[in-house]
Image (cartoon, rainbow, N blue to C red; front, top):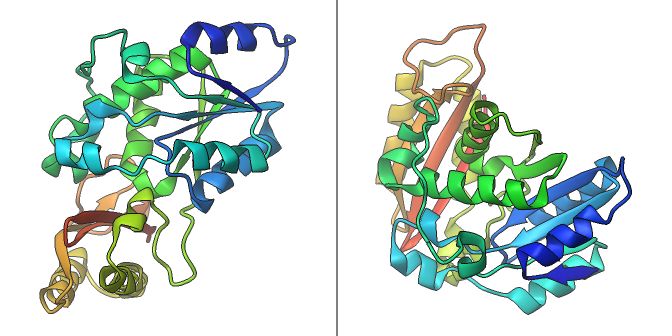
Length: 279
């Protein structure tokens, strides 16, 4: 496994590859877990070479406290990637990737950025768009792999690729869960034992939502979820929405031709957990 911190070094290596080799790319912010492993395994099945990046992107954090506290485990991550035969790892500094101008560019995502997460995390998706576009420009992958836990982010990246005519295929991968149903996340390591024990309630609720959505209206389901969390002593609901998968707008009336997904964000003390489920 080769590790590069400089853009020129990783590009020189990628440029030295034989023509016709397909490159799969898995961008990460480190603190890797089995969910990341599933992305890399899929990338390995579908490409000749796989490159992962580890970069905690400062411009997508709306609160500096979250950036400071985000788990950073680079040595452990590199050991993990080597054990699963990742070919190349790109580990730039913020100064390297942003060329000493650590700011995000403004993006238009046709309104996707104003739904759900966009209502609560100012500037977040501009930061996501800036770093993903930059990484695509550096790596020039044929395919890039993202987990569906961040489904809104996945749709926004697809929209960015479409609007900027980037020659990369975006592959969404299923949410990888703990045995008790909690969606795997690097933030889970920061949960207290008490809150970690309570957190599977989120997915349990989503599974009940999927059943109820078959017979009840979106408004009735939303009201039911709000009541479930009103009575919870450890988990605080930030939002719950049922939205169209394509435009991410909340729905009021079901349409048999559309695909819907339930989205949720919950605070376990100061740790913010998100999840979703296809309906």
